[in-house]
Image (cartoon, rainbow, N blue to C red; front, side, top):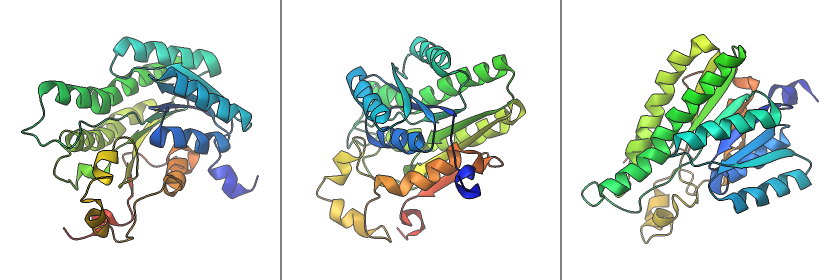
Length: 260
């Protein structure tokens, strides 16, 4: 390979992706596999995970799928232990799992909605990152990489995205605090902040009656397409970002630059 392709290579890197049964996680698994990574996919929907693993292996990649409920601490511990047993020490964690509660305002949601979103989008990032840090320290590697998937809703909100926007704002801030605290373990922590892409999480908003007007607020006048994120995820997952930590890479078609 050329020096440039080497820079972004993930050859023989062991990469965990949560929420990998659909949406961005499903897409990232293909991108990182093609870059040479051994990908370990985690999600609750085991059948979907098995299907994706088969696709990746048929394409010549190395992949395995394990059941993971990111809201369950015991499931997280078991998943990370099994992932390490499958391929060896984990090089990269992609904290991608995420949900939303539908088009609800703060006055409409109940505690069940709140807990569901916060447990999945926020608490799981902390739990997984903490458990992974423990593995890095135990193995004496002094090297690790965490990539959190946040959202431009951390700073640019749309009515009806509570508590999703709150959870993503917290993940962005968590990324920066973790970067500061994880450096002594040799772990870098960064975030990828997508704009609006058609996923299960965003579908309610992006298929609503306001969607056409909403897209007009994006300077590039279109929604994001999954391949638009490939460069950013490769940068953050690979050694090309070896001196980056606490960074938040925004990929949004200029949305956050636009006037309200």
